[in-house]
Image (tube, rainbow, N blue to C red):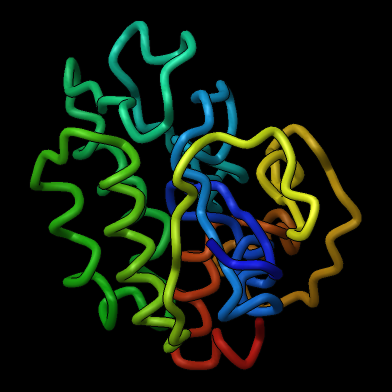
Length: 203
């Protein structure tokens, strides 16, 4: 376990703010693996920019996961074909972006294969994103749940879709910004598909 740095949650296609923080504290990063699954957070949802404005993609979890279950044990539900919906959503939102075709082969398999656990699914996605962003880091994981980490910057609750924190973000080109203006702190894939190799410089 690291002695300084930050503790981050594991998110689905995390927002830009997540990678800004990860970049600041790199390589001193530990990811929470034992917290109880909190509802309505980025752990199983991501915001993207659609022609109609904000679109939230939600990964459904198996019923009962929301009650005092460690995040590492939460299972993904496949009761309906959410993978097809998410992939169609990503294509319709970003097909016109400058770099979607450049990255799509990396992301397409996540919408075909069925991963059992949400944490594992998010972790594999995170590794792909870090590779595409060219962020070199070694991530460690919590070994048990601790309410507080006195020596670490605890970001487990602060990056939250319900909390509009004063996250400063410089606008970049977005596909539909002529319709709705710049939308901040969307999923990192919005930045990646629009800015491509410049994404790391942006962060």
